[in-house]
Image (cartoon, rainbow, N blue to C red; front, side, top):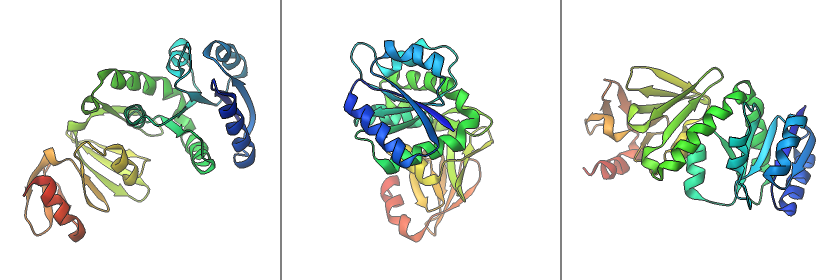
Length: 247
């Protein structure tokens, strides 16, 4: 059973999300709503939701204000927002979740399933949110810290600390400059989307590399990375790699 809270200043958005949850998310067994941060806070304290669907942009106080007001929260936050590329990228960098408005039933179901899969570290949400605030205050996506979260820990890395990412089934092995490997439950496709625009190069269906750590490319189809690892370049990706490296 999942208890959910919807915080949104638009009644139509609340009603749509309530209807979608009732139709497509049977694990959500009870829902409370509020149309302002002021109204939401006492309900959250008494209701103790598992998930808070939180609108970012609201008059008077934003969704961010709500999260900075509550101490030691252990619910999962799923932001609901109209399209804002910079904010969404910051959210994804911090291993937080979001839904675009108008909310789609398929994306809602996926978000609830993601929550069920990671609720073991949901209390880390407050730490993830602090990283999000730090990132978005930078005003420069190149300086974002990437949050890597699994069932037991959350690790923050700068992009230049990532040498490469390798798909392993539905997991991703992330090779770092400190000779450590972080195993993430996100797929390589998800990381490819998160890191879009940050110069990482998809050189193979199983490999995403940081070009700053490429030491050599033998033109036959292999990259040598700064940690000495060898990465195969697929035939389909050779031309795009040449362009990216300006060869």
